[in-house]
Image (cartoon, rainbow over all chains, first blue to last red; front, side, top):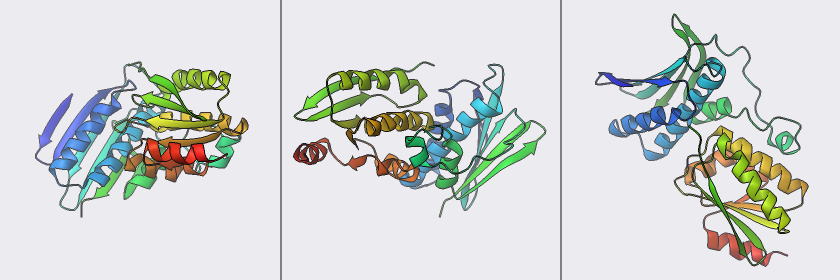
Length: 144
Length: 118
């Protein structure tokens, strides 16, 4: 379900099902295009939104089919922010930076790249924002 | 929302090209593994992973690629990538995939270099 809350804010309410992260991703891309983000940054935003939603579905909501993921996008004067809310208790320990050499040698699991990508692709990210509705990851990309 | 990849193997001289149609996510694992197994049975020594230019690739898909790269390295197979957008070139570089698989802009460029190498 997509709601335009005001001219600057859009909310996407997703079922907790892998694949639906693309709805939020495409919505963020369309909104970002309207407000003038350049295409390379829109691609960054798409990956960051997708990874944050996947993380919310798999880890925050622990795959529960009755849970929801709420993605709120806001366009400010200078930045574009996206908040991804799940029903979990936050990220207890942020994973360490992935080590590709170890992954190739099978000394480290091949997954666990999502948070790393988010940190690399957005200008600012805050994990573990706790609200009355759950846990949010907030990401910001500067428009100018 | 199960996804499906169509992976066609094409032999170009000494290079086996994996023509990967569709998005690359965790759901791609069985399709890529089956294709890799088939390529091994055919004695592949050089592997080129060719993606759809507009493919959506997420961290789950990258993890599957890392597993394939781990296998190609273990089996001493020269591996390269082509067809990815500039954004995913950047992502692959960030993650470190480019340390293990060179990225070529075009299929022709990749084949020209890979077939030349002994």
